[in-house]
Image (cartoon, rainbow, N blue to C red; front, side, top):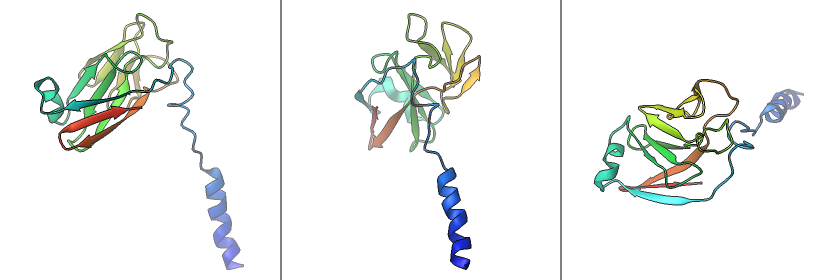
Length: 142
């Protein structure tokens, strides 16, 4: 009887867990694009990424670009720079100022550390990309 009382709550907990990440996946506004690029932190153009709290934006990858943010020199995050709450258009590309990415279509503003909507309206967060550091090289990929 004790075994049943132990395993039943555990079973309910497993059933209650959801692997849904609908805020990142299944966004009808952003197509899935496959890419992989590297940033050599020894190059002067990426000097900002050597220091925690700084970011670098490139508009050559992703849908409308990618922003990479240095959290603490061992953790980095990267997000798509196309507003996730608009289909890609001439104005849906975002610009980065500090830790805020702003959409040109409306007043949507997103936090580039978490990807969450900081101001404006919409149901989706910024689309995250993977970042891996190996020595002095950052690799960003989808």
